[in-house]
Image (cartoon, rainbow, N blue to C red; front, side):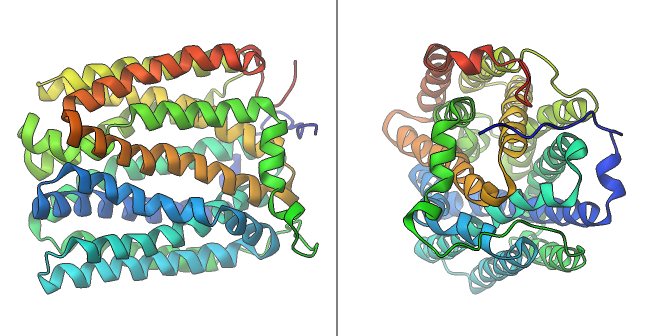
Length: 413
């Protein structure tokens, strides 16, 4: 299948000339900010209740399992129904899950199983939200402005990832209920913004549901080896190298910096990432995309090791920032490949496959980190994971030579 050939972008800010994209971008900013606020609050709250790092891993696992279990459904929903409506309904579900966490906190309960049950429902909602929201963006801007829109979407996510954890830590320090109350309010505003997005043309999946239509996303990814290599590299690199789940352990037991310090640690990767995302918005990758991908995945692994061994707060923050900057290159290249190469009619199902890879690398990676920390300690879990990431980068460079040799993200030689 030949990739879509975009023309040169007309303006670095061109995507925002389209009202629908501006509403969409702002809604995702609010939603992602709220998720990060809740993520910091729930991680600190659970670890405060149980003192067990394994529970931090379970937080990630229960949010990932729905995306895996429903992957054959979520993408088809995004391709068969109006993506704006699916996105809005899912954000309503997010608000309800956050309200449930607020109610749990107000109740004073310490039953962690209730938290896991709420997060499982949260994971179901996010499993449907990811493919619909990801596939909607290309419907809101012309093809020549899509690469810039992707970079701005990444910037939105990173702004939320920078400010959300800091706000979550500060709000939790003020009152355990404050993060959830703020999150519910902002997601509700996001729902209104999505409702304001004008109707956009979308190539719907009209065929009767069948096994062939359901697995079309997997088939596409499998045959496009460059896409397969990019998303699987990100999967295993972050699965092994991700240390986010163990930040409460480092904040409390290694660096002794408290809830505010946890917010700082959570924000540090995003500080590096948004710097790179903003740079890419104005200076997109033009050449040597494959080599850049492998180089920065290797850098990510090296500084994961540095963070794991650090007992000094400033060095830990710097290492996390460099990890975030390196990971942003991988995210940008992967997302650009998926959106530019994928036909609109199958984009939701391909995004569903991508969301499983992302979920596996993030939420399942958190579970891996929690289990490893319970067995060998947090420092050992992070250091070994970072070394594994470097090894994966070297191995994938050999297994996917077409990705290593890829120069342009739009498929040009």
